[in-house]
Amino acid sequence: MESKKTISLLLFLTFLFHLNTHSAASKLPTEALPTKSGYLSVNSTTGSAIFYAFYEAQFNNHTCLSQTPLVIWLQGGPGCSSMTGNLYGIGPWRVTHSIKETVNYLELQSNPGSWNRIFGLLFLDNPIGTGFSIASTPEEIPTDQEAVARHLFTAIRKFIALDPLFKSRPIYIAGESYAGKYVPSIGYYILKINPLLPLSKRVNLRGLAIGNGLTDPENQVGTHALQSYCLGLINDKQKTELEKLQLEAIQLTKAGYWSDATDARNNVFSFLQNAAGLASSFDFRTDHLYESYLVEEFLRSPEVKKALGVNEYMVFERCSKVVSAALHSDVMKSVRFKVEYLVENTKLLMFQGQCDLRDGVVSVESWIRKMKWEGLQKFLDVERDVWYVNGVHAGYVQKSDNLSNVAVNGAGHSVSADQAVNSQAMIEDWILDRGLFANKQIQNPFVDL
Ligand SMILES: *[C@@H]1O[C@H](CO)[C@@H](O)[C@H](O)[C@H]1NC(C)=O
Ligand SMILES: *[C@@H]1O[C@H](CO)[C@@H](O)[C@H](O)[C@H]1NC(C)=O
Ligand SMILES: *[C@@H]1O[C@H](CO)[C@@H](O)[C@H](O)[C@H]1NC(C)=O
Image (cartoon, rainbow, N blue to C red; front, side):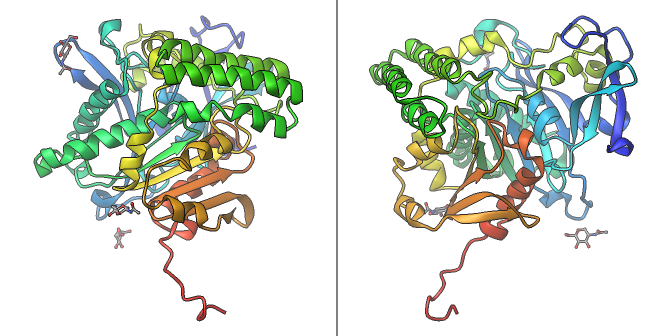
């Protein structure tokens, strides 16, 4: 027990699943407060705004702060709050459920795998209407990736303007799952608009990272039957049935029936979950269920909301159905062309937990190999390295030029929730070009040995 680092708490839960029992003591201790949090307006006329929580690097000094990388995190969904990634993934504190004496508490524990060890870390509830973000009207919620990127760009610029030290800091944008579409979209938007702006208004983007991402759905949706069959989760007959469902999703996508195509993809997962008897498709290991509902419990506490600068009448939802509905027709639209542009102009990290059945290793490889990129053949031919963290086998790294792709052992849909420390080693090495992410010198094979 890490009792020293455990802050007891916070949220007193009489009934764990009963959402209206927050009257009891519940607060965000000073040491767990973000460095800054609040709202970044994206439309001053309507008042719509993106909620943010920022944690400065734990190890920093003012001499180098202006060069300390900033990592921006975007959750997926569509419509899921980045506060899940914060409090159940890469943030400095993690909400956990623990039983003390005879009552249930939620506790915040310090996260040894936090991504803000040596980088600043910014969480944005994106798009508006998600988490604590404000959408003045449902009509204003983006229905496509261009609108998402426009709002994000405004929010990021506003954030940078909060502190003169932010301006020069290298920015990395990361996210998981449906952020496999947000991350390339905001990256593309930034790289296209930067040259049109004066230097002082540019966003200093240095790289993009996508965990278990949905990026090129038409290719990805075709991989589930084979993957699940090879894992022994379904038999040959079920594989054939699943393939039929996949084909339906692919055909509807090709025909541009976007909303139906999204439904067809959902049918693929329903069938698979049912056939394999799984509680979710986030992880095929049946004893690995994410307890991210704890984040929702925690953030519904009035005192926690007050500490974060959020109106106490706002009801926090981990995932917004309204936002999900707004982007329903966007789900199957590919952003692969954006990735193709990005990989020629900045560095890109893709990583997948091996146990994910949604957007895992096979799913992501299926579209990587179809990219139009001059470096692709070299990437496909390069040796895949076995990756160790602290001497323990952590997964595999394949890197060539600007593209790195990592398979993470012992992780499902959310790598950081499952392998926090390894995910920290990965992001630090990738951003700093170290270890397996170093730019390899071309070695003369005759000189080696
Ligand atoms: C703000 O919202 C209004 C109403 O939806 C819209 O007409 C206007 O274009 C928006 N402004 C910006 C800067 O997005
Ligand atoms: C602060 O960081 C700079 C740059 O990395 C380093 O040279 C300096 O020694 C550091 N100062 C302190 C007090 O740690
Ligand atoms: C990698 O990105 C750099 C810009 O950072 C670019 O100059 C280079 O051409 C890219 N390499 C490939 C193979 O696309």
